[in-house]
Length: 447
Ligand code: NDP
Image (cartoon, rainbow, N blue to C red; front, side, top):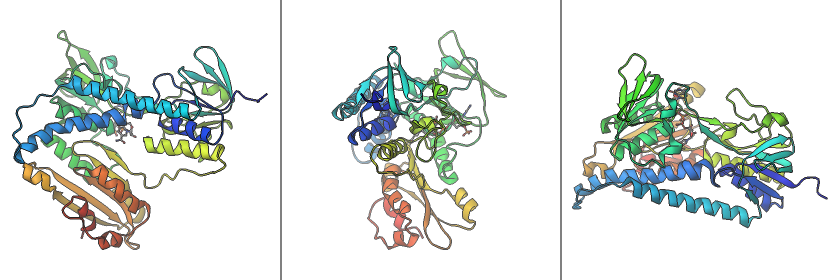
């Protein structure tokens, strides 16, 4: 008789958990995975995927307006939120189904129940059943962190945004990070009056300052309101169903919805203490470079470890875990030069060091910029300038960072990130002939 029921028990069928389960099973391990909600996790069900589809849907507001300048007779169009919402939700169901099929095809047992850790090798299911495992992988992700203020229950988070009955006429978004800026763009394009309220005067902390400033300038120009250095004190419901958001030393803001986009906290309420799994000061599971927790048989990947909260990173961590533990192919995730993007309107994207970080590290770095209006925007009469920035090592000429805002910036940056990751020099960019006319050609024309 086997010592354990399974070789690997994965808690959480999101991006990291599904990858780990599938790969471990491929290496011959007997694997079970528990998911209390739907297979796919945040990215597929209530994150990247439906968000990106809403971004596409929202951008038609600008495309339809621009089309008239390109000679198209566009009648006055109406936007029907429920059509988009329901189409997006059925696409989510389709992708979730594919994830489920992948697990089944790899002979992973999928358990649709909440699972908690009962000991170093034991998992307890909501039904009362216990399963023993040689290894347990925690891949439970994170959940929106909501400030503890009176009336917080009147607000929504990005989780609920995909299921709204209607687009609110006026929405206050708390926070100024990824989710706040992405949803500010989405709601604004759908016709809502959007006010972003942030506790500091910084949007998208961590991104290059000039690129952030450009987004702020463009977003403000479009009519998105920003309130900085503003703490929300409480939210009250009015008799007519609308809300009043009270901010210290300022007039309250009247709105129809409040969305909290104030960070995400790791989901660790799982009985981890039963196995001596320690958390760090941010409440995330402490792991070593091989994703192993302070309990030898328990590992963790993805947002629950709060290293870089991005889907492709969680997927790589899941892959590295399973290859190392079950595949006899040990490897680790390389966290250098991880590209990222914000799907705002226009989007921004970056890889490597920002100008500020590069100066801190190397002193007098070289900075090349291209500040231009995309051809399409010129003809459309859209006064919206793109900005590309290249940060270069002063002696070696190696490109240390690339940051951009403008149409299709994430698509362009992904390709250019290969060059940055490969340690190419500015000269290598300059040696590449421009592809004309394109926006991306600016990358090889920076002088
Ligand atoms: P972010 O960390 O991006 O932004 C959080 C925002 O909330 C900041 O403006 C921060 O202010 C503010 N804030 C934090 N704590 C509080 C608090 N207690 N009270 C009031 N304000 C607060 O988080 P998001 O929620 O936007 O997104 C979570 C994570 O999900 C991101 O960090 C990212 O890793 C991932 N994500 C990635 C996306 C992508 O790849 N495109 C899209 C969406 C999410 P300040 O910084 O000024 O202190």
